[in-house]
Image 1 (cartoon, rainbow, N blue to C red):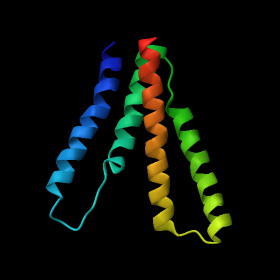
Image 2 (cartoon, one colour; image 1 turned 90 degrees about the vertical axis):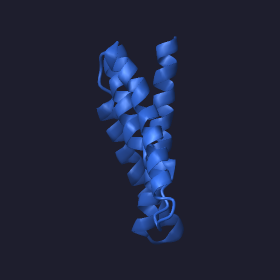
Image 3 (cartoon, one colour; image 1 turned 180 degrees about the vertical axis):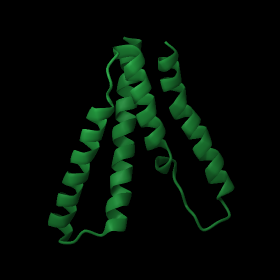
Length: 114
């Protein structure tokens, strides 16, 4: 039960930490979004919820999904744009990882309810 509670609270801790860091960097040239902070916290939250509730590790499946997402994104950008600009590729990949981990986190919280 402690793992489940920690898994629910860690992404919220990451959200608060991201807001604090964004406020500290407001006057500088660095522009960071919350999507830049949360994927790691969401992935850890999913892992803790899955270990505490389902007694299995979802970390391996999440990594395989991220790797497949990276490969498909690289192929898509190479086919559509006929080039692969690494700065844009990694920005898109990190934002897609944010969406993927957020979906996994919401699904596991919903599984906890039912």
